Image (cartoon, rainbow, N blue to C red):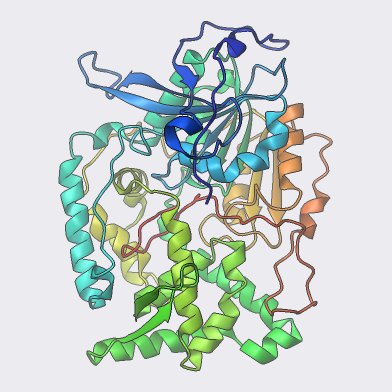
Length: 522
């Protein structure tokens, strides 16, 4: 991942912008040139980037409430006469930093930035906006027996809940939407466009509900509806994604002969790890980390193996390695799954998830949808019961009040582009289709070889740029997404032609990843 740092440009340039579409409203002088190379010793993200903060009340209904700062990054438009309706980009998680995400995604929005500013705001509770970070398991802890890991992880979550007990009521999605509008107003924009990834789509949808008059267009990538509890469906959606990969492998003669039925083999590997664990002799492996070649030890348990598959399904680049790694593991060779586990963990760590914010959202906005019967009857995703994990954590997490209509479907006539990947383990395309029913001017696009977030894949950046430029989906050709095919599942195979995209689809977005031994949610 590239490091985030920016060169400076005078804020006066913004004051000179002309507006051909929307009236300019009074802006506050809250941005200044970002720290330069001389101050940080790191390369710039883009020339002219501006950084700043906006102070808001933690409890907007209480004039005496403490103030918190919202961390803001603006990547200014290249045009000397840019449009006055910028694109706000919202990270997933929940708990991810939108400002940190800028380093990964800004290049995919280069065409948008020709005419419009790109705005990144750390949602309250994340990044540098009053973050709610929790202590998590150490590397040494992850070598403990699985039961001990689970017990210690829950103990750490409970400590975190007590630490942020007073803040939790004000760290929900509606507050995030209200904060975005305060930033919009402070920066002097009459209308904005929105892009949200994963949980970020929920923030964008809430903004559409609360502030439709200020929204020109929206892009939702990996749609997370407000009317369902996504964790409730994680296990079946993840299994469906793996089954799709398995079907593609079995349809390719070389893949079928080399790897066979990977779902069946994953079940066998899970059972082997469970038996070893039950006998008090869990399997571990020492291997060279694929990134830095340092000796690394990994404890192989049903839960760690399931978490590895789940996290890999987030990424198009890691999914392609699953058939080989699962087949090797079934034969007793664990070197590849160990390397894949290290890569998956490394990618998830890039998102810098604020665990306190993550639990504040899930435990207050999703958990009430999940019944005891749901938990009892849920079929684990191999060795991982995500519903039980969430239920155990949410049992003691602090509560927040939401409006009675919060979980009702969001109706909007704002032009909206909905993006999905066919291998998405947490926000598959049928959830986007559900949301689209209440969006009267929506366009849904599904990439056959896409995973969790497709905004950086193939021709999708071009589609996004056209959609933002037109402010509508009418007349935009989307057939090119059919070329975003699953990557070949066998090295050197030519049964399937890869997409022209060379970029990883790992916006964390991200993130709903649910292993409590390695955090991230969406």
